[in-house]
Image 1 (cartoon, one colour):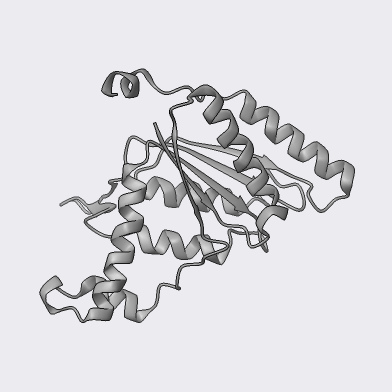
Image 2 (cartoon, helix red, strand yellow; image 1 turned 180 degrees about the vertical axis):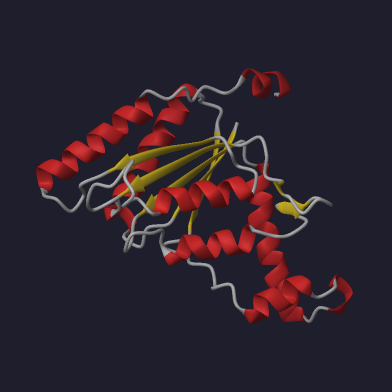
Length: 210
């Protein structure tokens, strides 16, 4: 199976969400030594914000694009191809000011393309086209909000990923990262336990296809 890991923390190796992602990658390799892992660190190498020039490039017919517009479209195409080729997608997401990092929002803006990763049916119903993916969202939060109305990020990500067709999403949170060393260690340990309990072996269909 091909696994795509999206890191979005600005803290590099000091990031708790990256720590969880590294742990999951190790568990994936243990369950499937032949697993192919691709990592995109948008915290270390942020994508440009989705601006008017980006929108203009994507809506300009291919034969009328300028060289700069073509480069913008090629970047979006590469991100989408990487996403579509993955069997499993792991998002490592810190909570900044009650929501996801701006870097991850930019990523989602670049891969949300009408007619490519989603479409509207003749009845006006949105249909996500990034289907058949096993998706994990590993979050790290300074306080504790999982399962409460104060968790404003999880509903957004569930809705956004579902809009793109990724409906099989497992959320695992490490909470209390800013509540002292003991709370932080406990939060990471509990998240690691939840990762360890996952069945990360390749699906039978993937084995047969190989």
